[in-house]
Image 1 (cartoon, rainbow, N blue to C red):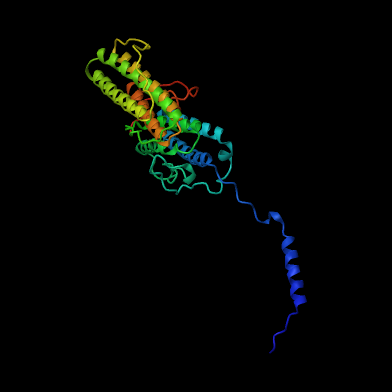
Image 2 (cartoon, helix red, strand yellow):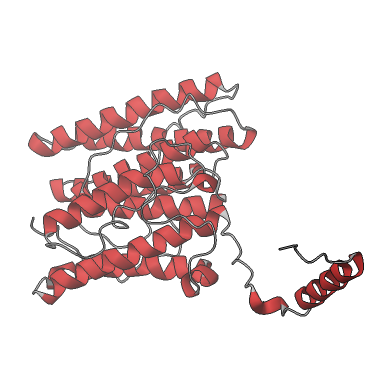
Length: 339
């Protein structure tokens, strides 16, 4: 049978109908994709989810009679509140297009940019399922603290300081030993050298204080003071080399330094040592604002080391944001919870 032949006029008329129908479709029929997160929003989304799940884990143990964990939970709640305050859109809205998911691979290096997907949180893929124990919480705190330095690249100095401060708090929670890497590989930035000089000045003061404490203590306390003295002396020498390598002039030590007191007992010596380490945390928090990613990571690790050492001398956590001005939480002595 012969197929009917469509005239040119019929073809043109049919095309006009199709175009007219397409033009009548409502523009809202196809929803626009949500805006992509900025690198900082992507990181904030991960941190907020992580903190919410960490708080839930603490809730589980507190509900079973772990009242001594309330201050630990409160500090995580303070972290969560500050993150939500800074990123209200992230806290209120659903995940934006392109936002990293919980299944993203963890960051393995300190220079990974959040634009490629920030490091996965230690709690992101776990939720609150499974048995909750102090050992699990300590492990999560330790992993979270270790992850913070790798999350500082490509974000503002202000947010980098907040994340580093949170990491120092988590390190105290976990009482994890922290070994700082060599910072010499970081690219030179003019402003970074000034911040390195301030960190060096803080190390000079710490070496002076621990030298005095070593002369006024005995036994096991003196051994601890000596280890701290050696650590700060080594870091002092390390910073001098880094500053010189970057073309800067190292800060020189002052003839003497004013101390809160001259301790006459082991308890007073421990209190002064804790105070010295708190000063180191604050000094390196400023270095976290450096432009170089490796310098930021280095400073964040030193903050964690100083925060844990401060806790070892005076087992009290008085703030959720070590080193940050005006971020104190209610003063209370917090013993280390049993494992």
